[in-house]
Amino acid sequence: MSISNLTSRISGFHRMSAEERREAVAAFAGLDGAATAQLARDGNIDPHLAEHMIENVVSSIAIPVGVATNLRIDGEDVLVPMATEESSVVAAVCNSARQCYDRGGFTTSMSGGEMIAQVQLLGVADPESARLRILERRAEIGALCDACDPMLVRLGGGFRDLEVRILPSRGGTMVIVHLIVDTRDAMGANTVNTMAETLAPRLAEWSGGRSLLRILSNLADRRLARARAVWPVEAIGGEAVRDGMLAAYHFAEADPYRAATHNKGIMNGVSAVVLATGNDTRAVEAGAHAYAARAGRYTSLTHWEMTAEGELAGMIELPMPVGLVGGATKIHPTAQACLKILGVKTAERLARIIAAVGLAQNFGAMKALATVGIQQGHMALHAHNVAIAAGAVGEEVGRVAAILVERRQVRQDAATEVLAQLRG
Image (cartoon, rainbow, N blue to C red; front, top):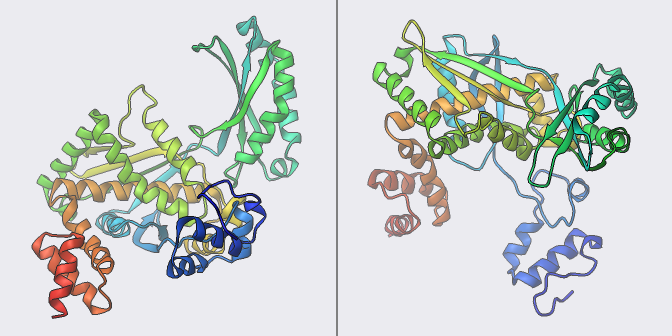
């Protein structure tokens, strides 16, 4: 197939085979044989499965999966798979968990397993009266919701509650209906979206308005995962380290510029477990950052304080809409293998483990920042990537990386120079 004038309008692209798509893309982008062949490597996912997971498939990309050790959560030792491309993330969780392991590790809890579906009603003449008219039909609304997914009801889930909000906006007053649904071991997006679309015409009729958006909210604040842990002062390096970490937290709590990076570090761990288990990283990240701004300004997802005994106590609370059934979680073989490593039987247990990992990740980042700086540990690991990018192979990788770290020159040009010197 040829593409003229480098147009991205490729007729019938979605109907092509993956091989034909690769050829089309290679022609468009001028890819050489090596790059085209790399796209054809399927990694650990079956091409047929990939073809049915998303549209216009040409390849798959492999992200390393590491395993975090030393985690004791609610009295149980667990190994946690983490999928990430970033150096030092897995190591930070291992080291952080080791330093609180003898103190009991992490204690977790969950607020519930409910998701929210929103129905937007516009043009309602009497919004306050409409609110009450809708609330009066709670039982009928519940029955209609449950009829959308009888299997969910048989599993103990289904409609739980109803909220109606009056929302002033630039475009006028809106009536927003929240359907509260227990989705059990599913993330639940498809279920609650179906309920919202089913109820929308009835809600419009009862309110005297018209429905527009019918969609879940990723601010899953009825599905909060919580974790806490205590680190003894002697395990973390003394009182100066503790006080430095508290000062780092106070900075993040007060300043959104710091909080954004502080929370990104937390999500390094959270998203790595979410991705490894085939869950929706974007949904979890969106909910977490929205939750961090729930008081009207963006702040830290974690809280840190000193106990009466002078130890360092950390806590995290964030929305965690993850599941064990549905989507990639159920069909991706690597995600299934990762869930087997975790040994989880419920979505709640998975969510609680993820919260503990987020807290451990935050501890590791804050400790590094408050002591040697984030670069020392991170760059020592990143130096191996730089060495490989410069062309180092085998034992050369470690030798080049060590020299780069010693010189504090973890850069591509420096790695190329060092490699050339080693090779004479």
